[in-house]
Image (cartoon, rainbow, N blue to C red; front, side, top):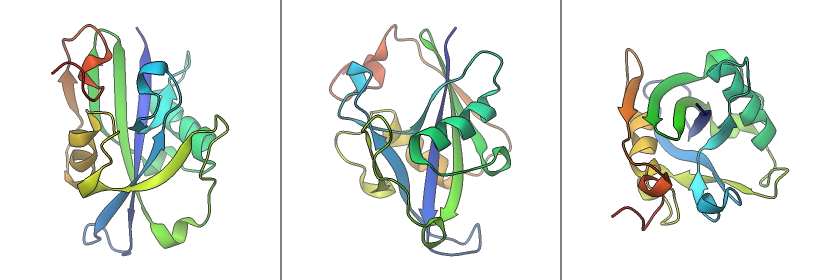
Length: 162
């Protein structure tokens, strides 16, 4: 079974959680795989053999954004369970002005940019339309698990599976 991680870095302009106003999420516009090409997605990738999902999250985030994070900064929010594998979704928060500069394209040439949570671009993977606000605003005692029965990626891709 394939296992993936995906992370949302939420940006705010205040110092005191939970009173901060979270307005932005850092997303990547994918070039591959083909079914994701041109769509905004969370930052992440495949969990390697022997690696824990939280370890994969910090590694993938660093590889794709050049932003260092630690395992303790990430909170596991959702696991999507489906026939194609499992995806662990994590979140973390940062004051945008404290982040500093980072590359706006990764080593794969994919664009990385802030998107407004309340108005995600049309070319955002469909499942992010609920995952982003859920992960931005919910306070959970433990992660939730969502089971997906479809046999392919149609449930995630705009304009498909409807």
